[in-house]
Length: 503
Image (cartoon, rainbow, N blue to C red; front, side, top):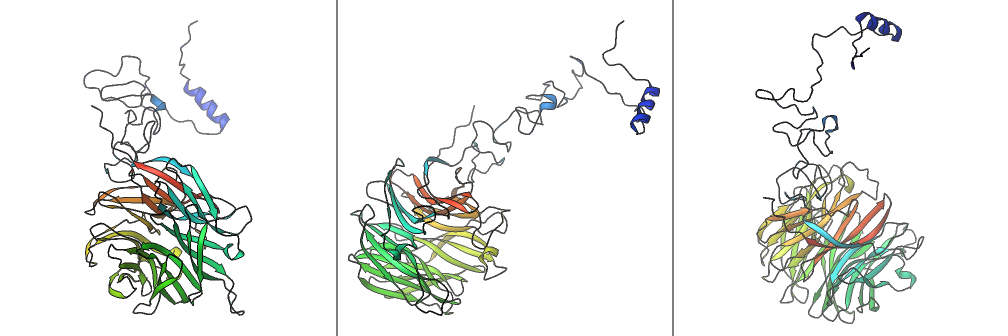
C-alpha cells in the first residue's frame, strides 16, 4: 500500500485528540498551507518571497529559516555588507551610518589601529598613568601611581618605553617613607633628557585635631632613567596642595597647581624653579569671587612668557592669564561656561596661537556631587592675545560626565584631545565611575577629522596623549580589568587610511 507523505487527519480524530489533551480543536481554516515544489511560484507577475529558501530575482541569498541578523544571509535576503550595522569578518566596526568622521568610517574600519598596548603597573588598587612626554631618543616616559607589590601603598612611578613597546627602565620614587603615598601627575623632558615631574604626596596633618589627610605639592628633577637629582616638597598653606601641570622655560621649569584652603576656597598657584630646584618666583590666583579657583594647565611661549589656565568662580568660568618671565601678570581672559567650565590642558603652536582643552558643565543637579554632573569636553583655538578663533564641543551620549584631560598638537596643524567617557548604564560608586578612553582629532580650522574609542579600551580612562615624529599617537591612562581593579595602560596608535571602494 502506498502511503501519503503528509496524511491528513480526519476532523473526528482531531476532536478526540483535543479532548484528551484538554483544549478545544482549532476549526479548519479556509486558507491552505501550500508547500512549494521546485519551479513553483516563479515567473512573470510573481513577487520574490524572502525566507522561502530559494534565491529569487532581487535577492542576494535565501537560507529560509536560517536567515538571521548576524548570519551569512540577512533577514532581508541580502549578503553581509559594510554599512548594514553588523560587524562581519574583515570589518573592524559597522555603525550603519555614512559619517566618515566618527569612530567607524564608511569603509567599516576604525580611524586608529594599535601598534602595541602595554600595562606597566597593576595591583590590588586601581593603578593609573597620568602623564606622558616624548624623550629625545624617540620613545616616551610615562608617570602615574601604582603599587610595587600587592598590599603595598600607592606610590609614584616612572617608566621609559621605546617605540617598539619595550620597557627600557622603571623607577619608583625614593624609598623614603614620605614618598609612600606620592602621585606623579605630570612630566616634561628637557633637551638633555632630564625628567621634570610634579604631583602631590599625602602627609599627616600638623593639627592634631584635624582627622583628615593633607597633600603637599612636590617637584623632582630626575636623570634620563628616573633617578632623582633633587626633590622639592612644600606645604603651600592649604589642606590639599597639588602640582597638576609642568612646562619648561629658559631657566628651568614652571609648575601649575592649586592649594585648598577650605571646602569653598581654593587658589591657583604657579611656581618657577631653576635647574637646582630653587624657587625663582611664585604667583597665586584667587579669582574675583574668592571661591573655587585652580590652575590646571601651563605653557611657555617662545619669548619666555607663561600662560596658565584653570577654572574659577565656583567653576562657572574658565580662565587664562599671561605672566612675564618674572611671574608678573600681563593680562587675563575669562570665558563663561553654561553652568561651569575649566581648562585641563594648554599648548602654544609655532605661530603663537593658544590651544585649550577643557571641560564644560552643562548641568549639575548636585553641585557638591560630581557624579551627578552632565559635562562635555571642548577644544578652543585662540590668537596670541587670547581672542577666540573657534571653539568645538564633544557632547556625550546622554547626560553623562565626559571629560577632556590631554592635548597634543599636530605638526601639520590641528590638535588631538583625549579624555574619559563614562559608560552609559553603569553604576557609579562614590569614588569610581567605570568609563572608557576616547579621543577626537581636529584640523587647524576646527573641522573634526575623526573621533575614536580604541578597541582595547573596553573600560578605563584616557589621561594623556603625545604625537611623535612618525605621526604615531601615544595614549596613556588606565585599563580597568574588573570594577575595582585596573592597570596603568600605554598604547601606540597610527591613523589608518580609508580603503578604496571596491569596483
